[in-house]
Length: 221
Length: 221
DNA sequence: CTATCATTCAATCATTTCATTGAATGACGA
DNA sequence: TCGTCATTCAATGAAATGATTGAATGATAG
Image (cartoon, rainbow over all chains, first blue to last red; front, side, top):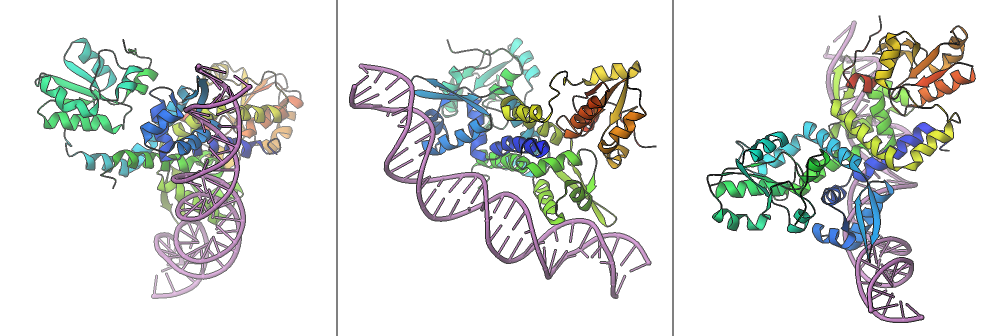
């Protein structure tokens, strides 16, 4: 069968991969796994989903060759199979961004600070950091920060923004980043900082993209 | 709702795109549309599918922002929305290629000529053509050839390979290409030419990729 | 060897997707 | 304005997918 009709068989294989990407929860799982390997249990906790459900979706991703599984003690650590997965995610996102007005509407509707929402590019950030002009904050939870973060970044989880900002120099610009280009946490961080009188912008994308670009990553001490 | 939970709403939008790519027929449709715009009727004929079915799938692709529709006389011409669609297709294919042993098995199982199946790269082909060392054949149907082909290529549809090869110099190497990197026709052309005593290789991918790389495309006279 | 416990499986029901048929739409061209 | 015809819609049944529950698995740690 696969021998008699290789064309259809190939499309079927490609479709399996695309179909595996075709579910909101699985995409969210991929974004989390892009921060680092996780056990089923840990991932389920991050997502606020029943363990069995997460397990099922992980199986689907595994069948499609999107994630790999490796036993570690009594846990099984799932991780993205390779970098091509992130590229595929990004490519799908690019189609959605360009075509679905919906995406733009969602982001704009959520954050009224429409002006100067223009994000900071990676090159720009590197220059700013080199010159010591900005404070870089990583608004992800501490465990994700510990698995790797941008050089010079300090960890200020979303819930601690307000406390942190009181001790910070209000005249100094802040750049915030989190899990990826559409990760909501950095949007919220920027909105919060601005309402507290700080000058703040987002990095255009997150940790996984930074790492995938071959830029240096710092690990927890 | 989308305002209250932008994260899920965004993932949902991305999932719509991926889901639209998650069907073998739709992927095949995308590959055909990558050759040029087509009416529903023409596309259905190419695919050997009922018109209504093709129409439905086109709607699905349109909803996801993957194809665009434009009326032309009494036909509606569907085309890929933009280049990002091809990138997404390629990215999904890359995941499948790297991870699904199945893909490799299908290709290898179909063509026993295992040795020297190494394809010709785009740069390599340009050098070979510049030096006049190879004959470049486009094995797609004439209508697709007419919509654009590689400079210097001659159109030899699959069914005419044998006739053509009798009039060709058997000592000269042939490079064949068709719709894309996994398009079966160029595999078959190479196999046929080899069994007829010619030296033949495939181009690593097809017309759409050539065009997307910004390389020159020739139109029918 | 055995108890533990992270993970997977199995079974269920609700929901969605898919192919197919034939009828309805609606823009073009005269 | 009207007929034509490419395209879409609507309705059907079959098949696949998704969430949830609780039980089964099976590797580890003691």
